[in-house]
Length: 208
Length: 101
Image (cartoon, rainbow over all chains, first blue to last red; front, side, top):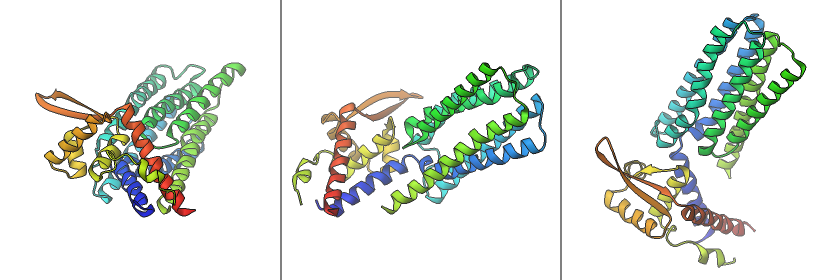
């Protein structure tokens, strides 16, 4: 075997591993889409003065729903483009891994919004809970994804814990504008940064 | 060029069909026989032979269960298989690296 054959074998391995995991190539566009959605949502939310519990909760749940639909369509487009199976076993496993946390996030979102909305701590409790649960979802998905997702999950989890501790320590009630900002930083900034990172690292590995 | 990495390549994995099977299983916790057959475009017989070879080498485990009253065969990499596959990839990368020197 010469170096060319070794290189070809590595390429075949990479292609086969990726073919069985369609979401990997869709990961960058999905993360960039979710990041932009989070940032734009945060700016619009703050700009529109969405400043009370029910509108805040409903607004971000609607954005999350948009995010899920968008991610689904992007993954489907990638599968059609490459003439590959969309609902592949790997995609199924990633979906199964993230589903519990996302489901709890949705349920908690409704409970917080409609039952606990008047509590003093609502404006930070809901974003922080979503950040923590999303971090757990990413970490679970990380067992089936190539790189970085678990680290991103930990960033969400540690960020959520830090926010909780700091809020308890100073006993502060966040203004809703600050809650929109927190949502924008985590669901916008972090995801956009990760999407851009995956985009460039994937492009460079394809060139290699 | 140092011939040592070539000689160390695992002959069980270093076959087109088996390398493909190992690659799929390395990217998934487990896959069914049908999923592998569809992804790789192999015949039942061909796939069975390769799976048996890998199983005999201790690289994969095969379990047979029933789903909706139909038999379901699923395969997954064993710890040994994962280690052997990682080692195989390391050797291929070593060959490529040495050729670039």
